[in-house]
Image 1 (tube, rainbow, N blue to C red):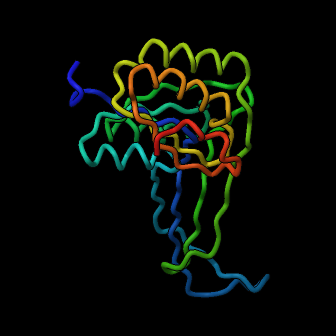
Image 2: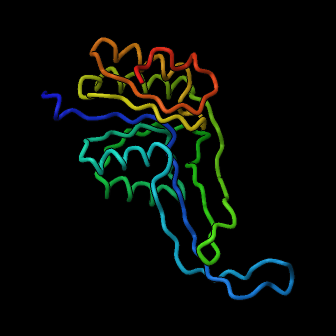
Length: 190
């Protein structure tokens, strides 16, 4: 397989970014708060999804790997990933719910952000599936990007699996760490 045809693996925390834009021309009589009239709601890939989307805009072949759950936000995430032609390999965890960050705008000014997230840890099954996938597919990647937003997908064990398997194939690893422990990333390249 030519290096040009190889893919980039993006591993990390996937979000759904929601932008709710409202008009407001008066305040509520019950409280000192604006009355918002819904105008438009837009959805974007966030977290490692944004990294993958940016790579696709440069015509890179991308595989995104993250936790995922089938909930009321999964439709929008799947739709956007498919539209951008981002291949996925999702790990399912019984305690995981898709992360979303909802930004509220009043007359083009952001007035609030509502985050729905729960940090979880890998269980034995998800670590095993992650490692099996990487062992089976490591040869198809020309680089790996670890997109860590400290929401649970990236931990020391995941980074160890990535670094140990990729060094045999000279695959460069890029990390964008949120984790405050730099020891996690001692064996990554960039």
